[in-house]
Image 1 (cartoon, rainbow, N blue to C red):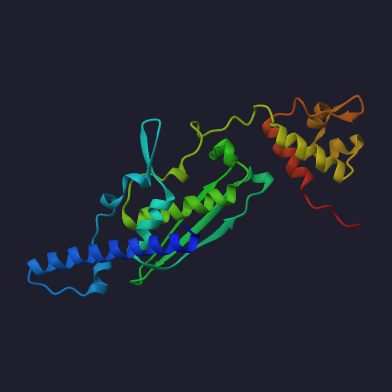
Image 2: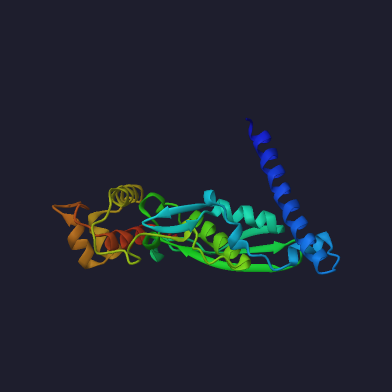
Length: 236
């Protein structure tokens, strides 16, 4: 099945779901002797949580979470005009790669919902630590949809490491060491400049026998070194 065909089938199924929901509401209104405008159906109070499908959930360690794809399906059923993300704070080395994103949804009935979320090295599982902006965007969108539709189940994208507080005193990883080594060479930092750039205490630790040695650098120290190495050089 091609992507175009798959998309068409998905949209057809969504249209069928919307039609079924509207038909149900019309029938309920008729029982009360009311005539219901089809376009007004989406403005009624809907128990969106009850419409979460089993395939929209994921179970981890005995707890259930809703997938962002499932939330997006409900948002399409609800009907929206736009769904946009805006980066409020960019991820930088000197702020632990913390990124904050604001997500706004303008629904087709004129209602606007907005929610924010952040992501950083401390709050992202190992496999996604290099993508704080993408994770913050996903989390903000998920929170926005959940808040708008009254879904209390946390989304899978919002969960992070088992421990919310990363031990920054632990050892640095190979990726950090490789990046620091590359920047030192690219900026042609000499051991004589180490104290001025990294501070005397850290310089005494990383300069051994006239060369940079990074094997004992902690995670926090690596973050500090990366922040120093990424500062723009002053033009003379």
